[in-house]
Length: 221
Image (cartoon, rainbow, N blue to C red; front, side):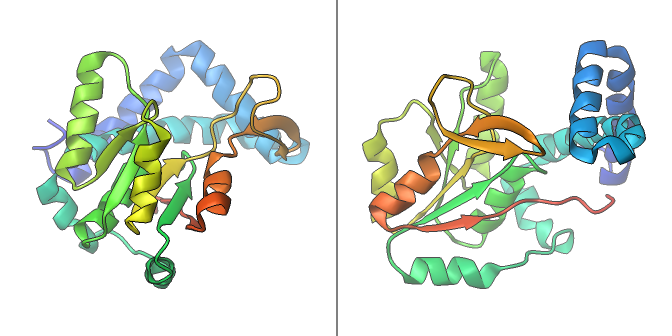
């Protein structure tokens, strides 16, 4: 349905579905509201439930984009997207040591990677194995259909190093907190302590690859 219904209708149905999930899934709702209160601070914490509800609706739209992702769809994206900072991509490849592009779980990161792949850049994404297996197979096949080359998180480090030595792009998300004692880098994130992975920065320092941050931001539909 997501790939055959008009996009505007798909977005509307998915947003309503996300809002319904917000009301039905109590534990996720509490976590989302608590996160927004942490971000907003005491002065604006009353906005947290409204923004949490909107984030569930937005996640529904994200799923539509994910399910519609295909080689044909990626090539038709330019009319719906504005890409800022392409000059930094060109400058990174001109250095000849590869590019490490890091992002957060903000917007549709697969769509972001696909934009560069459809423009002829060699793009590899480091991806976790998803569950259940049928969902993993669907997501990884969708990524490959858009020209993304998938490297699983369990891959040997040599496979990652070969990407950079060929002066190609390596994309990964770096905002998942680490809870193991001593792992990652300690930071304060919206006033609370946590640890985040250091792999991307360490890899850039050791290989000389360019390191760029990027994100996808939705504006309306």
